[in-house]
Length: 436
Image 1 (tube, rainbow, N blue to C red):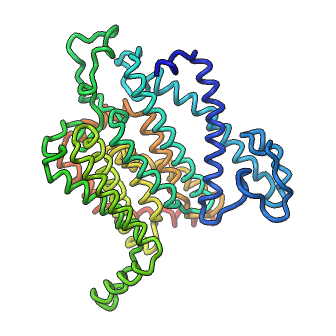
Image 2: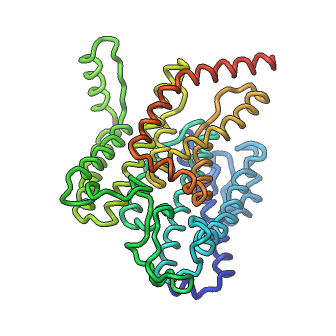
Image 3: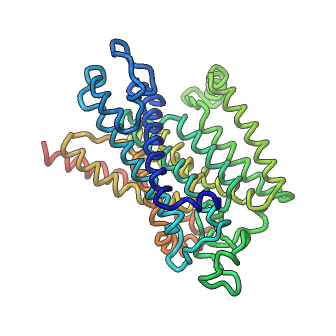
């Protein structure tokens, strides 16, 4: 860490600008290769038939797209503009994010001193690296959703697994809970970070802003292990194929379900992942400590966030008599919950519709389309929650401090969802009739 801090900040930011452009190139590769219909647009992919061989210069981030304009006949006019902008945006965003997280400490309220000790600087640098991964995955998922109205499991599954590993390996890098923070005795601005120990630092847990109860600790408390394994099992079940046809009775429906699962090629992989993951969860539970707190928090965030969207998907389909949200939105929110925790994910879910409604009305009026990909708005809301975290959590913490009343309120909102969706459909139909 001292070697990194010894490099002048200006040189670090310049290097991050170049690295951001390279990461943008990786994002573009993921967008075109992981899509349901892959396209050979990225210069790192083989060129499509009939296109001349690509040159090494084509792979230079940003500038390479200027040369690739020659492939417009194969990919469409102006195809190069968006990937070029993606790489430019990533190049600008990475040094800004680094400055915001490691210099300005943007995830903390303004009353925290900004002069970090080397040990805490390493923690905030690790936190910055983790959020680069998180934001990059969300960007790939959003662009694919815009193109195809699908979100591939390759993104959300890898992103969720990365979040679980990060929560267990680097729990201090999770979203901070400044509301529950208490400064160490004798700490002032001059020696704050020198006196602050790892045990003094408060991050988001299952019960934040309330203290984490001992019953949710590691070994030998079996209840916390059962909770973690249940969340993991629910996620693995959600990834498996679930064809359910109850018209001819429960027994027949179960037989069809099991037969389809046996024939599905992904079933062995999911079973293997489930077994390996369960063994890893038991190992972390045995070790206990902050690693277990971080892991069980991420698992609950994953299950609660994905389960909420899954429930809304089912209710919306029943109320609208059509698919209201794709299952990719479920796995995407599970990934967001694993990275941010269930409390922040609730904020994400309630903020996303505002942007979606505004954009959806514009698309409805201009293009007469009543279907829009919802994943980009979930990702945009997740980005907004992270960037506005100190103010948002200060406002939201008293609400989440209600404890068991929070899930009761959420269930009540789900109950009200069906009539509200009916009202929304009626409103959309009225707006469409005005522009006929």
